[in-house]
Image (cartoon, rainbow over all chains, first blue to last red; front, side, top):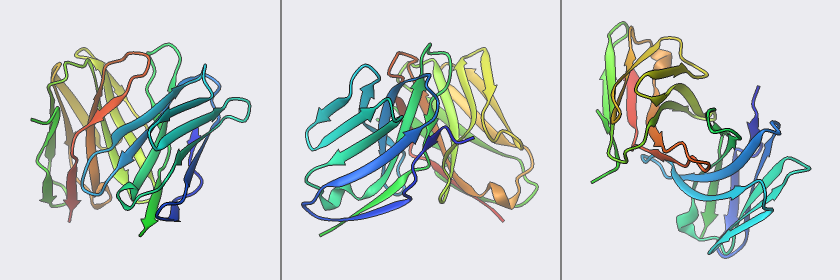
Length: 113
Length: 113
């Protein structure tokens, strides 16, 4: 059972435009959500996160939105740059701290110059 | 120096061989993880350890075993490698705090012929 889903395996966006990556989850016990970015031949790196008590968190060009009622989160990148081309994973942590994080399957973003 | 290191970075082996992948971390974290990445399948958890005496199976543990030799070291073994274990393997660590951000190693590309 895939508790964290990224339904778009790939996305292409023109440089300068907005990139929107989506993630859906099913487990209402998830308390904290994170986005990781992965370049080829490297391990994933943490990008941005959001607590379930918030609905928005912004860090420079990156903003994550959380809609708890819809169990949906999205990552907005504005403006998109060619260096943003990577695979993006969303991840969810449950309450309590004694259970493992769950990752989505990833979305490959290509920003076209 | 990298916080999470993996050895080897690349390995080619033959079916039936035993192989060990090693992971070391300098972040002082208690939690360590092993993931594999296959194209289109995202990150699949193989094993995880919340402290030296705690080992847990992940989603795809069959055919794998692990050893937590110390807080800083977590090794993954393939007892008898088979071709469908050809993948990219990542080690990660986390602190176990509420955000539980994971820090990944650079990955090991394993090919089983």
